[in-house]
View 1 (cartoon, rainbow, N blue to C red):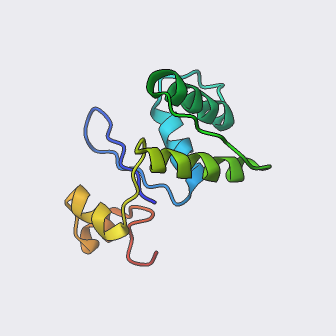
View 2 (tube, rainbow, N blue to C red):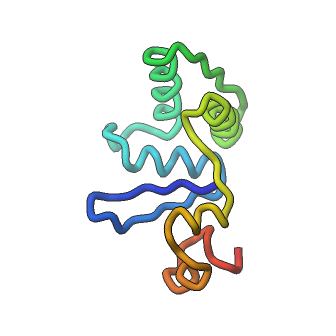
Length: 112
């Protein structure tokens, strides 16, 4: 799973290795209180999906990782999030494999 997040300076690239990591990255850039937990953030996204798009996302699971996986799959299925491969991520970022290795971008390095 790869997620690109750009800051205003256009230099930050974030890569998430699992579903929970995707929501952690999204939360880090959202305008939400810093005290909000990732689980609360997921719930706010679920609420927004229903409120603004009429799409019901039903989060299941006992652990936070299971809940993130459940929510992630539904957000992808509804088109709110997209999945791309490592190769697609490199192309999208305009990087070669050597560039990603030199920049030491987790998730895009050749050893991963």
